[in-house]
Image 1 (cartoon, rainbow, N blue to C red):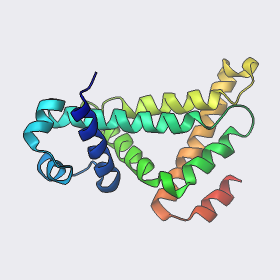
Image 2 (tube, one colour):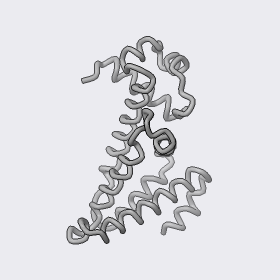
Image 3 (cartoon, one colour):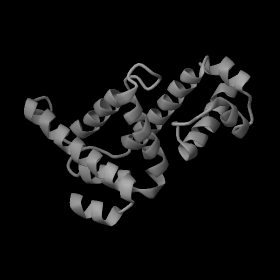
Image 4 (cartoon, one colour):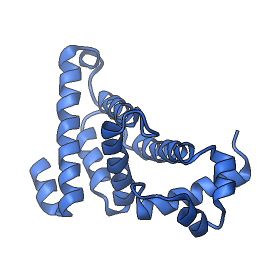
Length: 172
């Protein structure tokens, strides 16, 4: 179980990367911004990679907690898009996108497995909208995969352009 100080610094670092991203994160500026030192961060997280893994786990936990409120049954895709397109979630989703892409190009780094894990998370959320007799079939998996591809493509478009009206209209 993490110490209170580790939790406090992880939360502060998480707020920092939601604003600044992970791409160029350097321990010295991060430590200064959150009122710590590189020595303390390295002690608590073991390495920069350990801190990044902890931040990715924190972001994924945040995403899963928010997704848990989506509900089940018909309309889940529309509710997911409503959640994805909410301006309040842009920092988290931008961080998610960065981590997702990095896990594809640096599969052995601290990002390892992030993309695959989030695909599985989202497919699980989408399965809750399917009738039980469809959920465990190849057709059910194909439907969830199609819906996920549509949502992810729309999310990429929204994050790139900020044109919520156009992208939402395309999903309607």
